[in-house]
Image 1 (tube, helix red, strand yellow):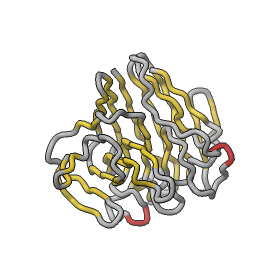
Image 2 (cartoon, one colour):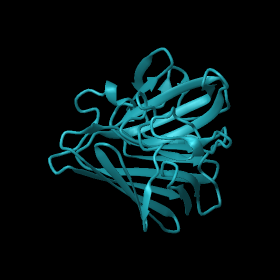
Image 3 (cartoon, helix red, strand yellow):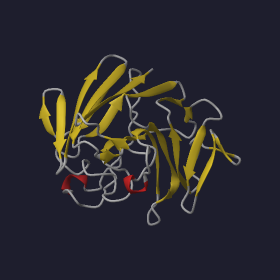
Length: 254
């Protein structure tokens, strides 16, 4: 596997190529991402964004996407007013391992996601056990149902662009596989004593309202809500008395 990361612009992963040569990360060029500063509105350039301490809400997609990360060998770190987040990435022939360390005050609440926008064909899908609980967030409502069906819609299949948009949250899932033709991408999150799950961003040309485009995301996350402000007890990550949380994201490709 090969990975390219832009430390100066949010620590964003801009390329992830599997052993078969497939580029897994979707990119949206020409959006002036290089010009943003902390506090600016989110600029969607694709790739894999580190969303912390929230995904939705304020600040949109969190605080760290708009900050420069500092490099120290294989480790990159970013510092905010009340936290320090570091990430060390190692790559072998078929697996990438990203080890994270968060330092913040005891009791600090957060949401984190590896907001990976993937370059997928119309036939791509996500494999999870059937019937597990999921919450589908639609523009006008949220619905709870069993994977993978929302009514007669199979949300595990991305399919052709049809003007729809939804977010799908699958609590307590820590591993998934994305299948696109003969290529497979596995994503596994390892973390102790924190709520976690998986979120899908299924934008088939339905967002934004002005100038919609297609973008499909598969996002391992800590927390059960996209927006920290909406997270109740047990739905967000919490820093323990040690002042430190560690987790690992493993990505494999075949």
